[in-house]
Image 1 (cartoon, rainbow, N blue to C red):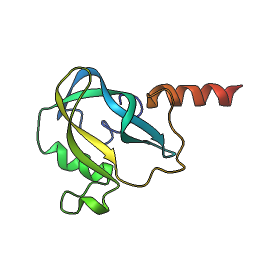
Image 2: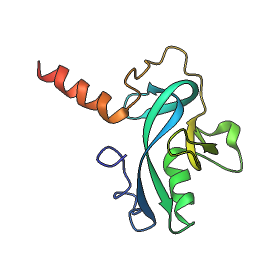
Image 3: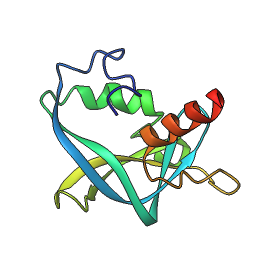
Length: 123
């Protein structure tokens, strides 16, 4: 997401065009420095980007720990899924490890979760 991810740091900003907010069926788990999407069971707020240059997918795969040659060993797997809003297909990175014991991000938004954690630290 803008402001919490590494698109600029990865040099992806020219290869992707921001389309707008979107929603995915699923839940987020807090993995410490980043979230993991687990399919089903709720609604997750995300951001939708259009791929302008297909070569960006390899950079994103490496960043997300996805190996298309060996998905079973990947930290995240890239899957084409149907979004809830807007109703269209999109590439989504899904957490590919056991999520048992990982805290659920109840807000369904990693950005709001980080903001709440920052407010709690200030109190």
